[in-house]
Figure (cartoon, rainbow, N blue to C red):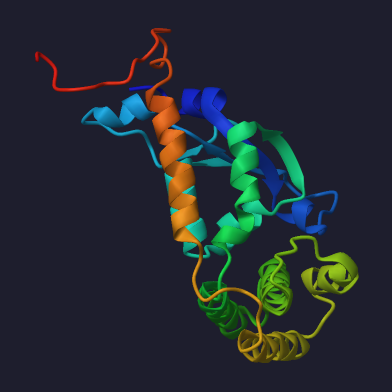
Length: 246
């Protein structure tokens, strides 16, 4: 089996910086979070042991998804994956990656409201638990939750996912520093939740994502890989026709 780090090294089609640096919320102490998408060569799927759906590393703060898994998560409106796809800080992209980026709107649908809201609720409950136990939330997590809820509301209103926080930067960083009372942060979150709920009825987003368009893209990528060289042996693949031995 091809080592996971080689899949990332040799077959990445898209890589970007995410997290605070992509959101416009970086400070001098911020890490550089890198995310990517690799295409495992199709012949690797013909073995009993399949390629990994994701790989952590090889560098610190690096995480990559295999293309199919990435597309599955994006079609489900996974917030982390969608934000990766819309990062303004692209570090590596080839022709396949550019086509993936051209499909960004195909992944977006009204499902984003359900998915983002469910994620936000789970994070809010964790913050509430912190307040009960320690008297205060984890302020960095509170900041990012407000940021995510703002992105969800704006996406529903405009049909466009914008990752950079823009003019909200100073206020969000004040939340991170614990300078905004928790009651005020809660009120901000409640207002964003209400505004998102109202935006759903008027959103330009389609009811469901364009799964057929994404599936066609994935099929072509797999087909082209199957007809190309085998990994590591340099031998050209020829189309298979008929049944072997006949």
